[in-house]
Amino acid sequence: MLSYLLVLTVTVEAQRIQGEQKDDSCVCKLSSSIWAFPTVRFEGVQNQLQTCEENLIKFHNKDSNVQMPKMELSLKNIKARLKPFEYLDTNGLYNTLHLQQLMQELDQMYYTARDAHNKNPSKETNDLLKELTNAKEDVQNMYKNNIFNLETMKSRLRDLNNRVQTCKTIPEDFRSTCHQRIMSNISSPVVTKLNSISKSYISGAWGRDAKRDSKERYWEHCLVSGNQHGSTVRMYNSYEDFMANKNYKDENIASSYSHKNAVQGSGTILYDNTVFYQCYSTAEICSFNITTQTTKRMKLDGAGIENKFPFCYYSCRDWTDIDLEADQNAVWVIYATEENHGNIVVSRLDPLSLNITHTWKTHLFKRSVTSTFMVCGVLYATRYVNTYQEEVFYAFDTTTGQEINFLSLPFEKVSPGIANLNYNPVDRRLYMYNDGYLLAYNTFN
Image (cartoon, rainbow, N blue to C red; front, top):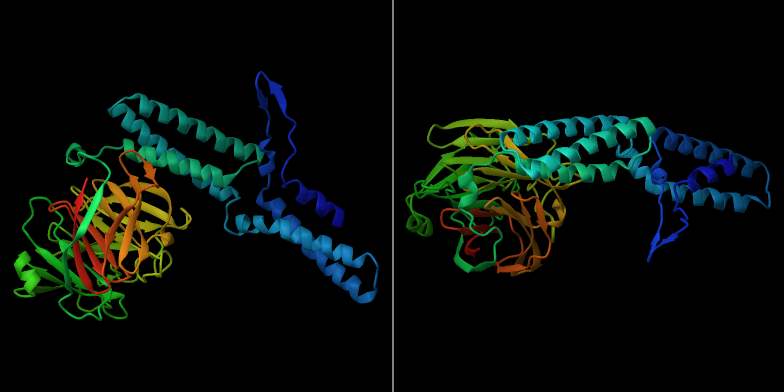
């Protein structure tokens, strides 16, 4: 049994490939059978290994043998070599169900791309349809041959999905207002003040109504109950009133901070006199219309909550699993899912219907980020530099699907922790809630 196990595990190790000289190049042919490791075979090996180990212990108790240390060492070696595959098995990266889910995702992407091509035929959409067809054939072959690297296939589908989302219809005026896609500079703080309640309220959000042509409204929202929940947003009708902490009105979003419509986390935004936020203790988005005093809600499928995927670069900022941002013509939801391995997912939300219209999946791990914000359909992520400095280091352009990892846009802060960061397209300012302090910056494209 021991020798059988050794043979099985060796099949997943590196292959020795014989090279062949062609012209001025060395050509090697690599067999993809190195990934032939389905769940059933893996679990069979694990079970046999467990039985072998138990028998070895019994044998050891009965009789001492000069071969015993060598056999124990071999078993230990086998277990170590199987360890990397245990994660793949327990997390469902190799099983038939996930292949079915992949096929469903591919079908949905194919139909979306086909509709986009029928409405506006182009070389880009035609090439995308061909790639999606090839991907569907590859998944079918996985079923037949039982040979696959599901993780690589998921990465391929993520890239294809981002291209499909980009092909879907987005209002023309959304793009026309963004003459340059990527931000180039952030100013020193042009506003610095303590929140109007208390320095002890270290988590919250603030800003200006992000809807173009909207009435000038400034808002402030502080979290209570362990910096986790909130039920009130403070409204100001002018910048002067905001700076002087006067003539404000406290709008009650919910009757208490434990109500089902209460706010959870600091990812709040105001758009068209409507507050968008994560609903109390659920993976749902709430919108509270201040004018009509009505609340809507929608489920955010797969989103991690309850500090599963908070912003975490320097020290974890609790209750930041879901971040709401606003842009010229939409509200954006930034979150992470298990399906995307904790990496950031960006969804475009129609602010009236409260339906998700587009979703992009990035390769950026959410826990490696301090905060995020959206400018002209581009996601920006920041990281901690030191107590008094932050840096924008990453961007994802939803129009092109391109990820940019070489940004370096430093900006100042007055305290280490960032609870909320949001961009306002009306005044082109960046608003930060910084451990109880309210800061604003001018931005430049």
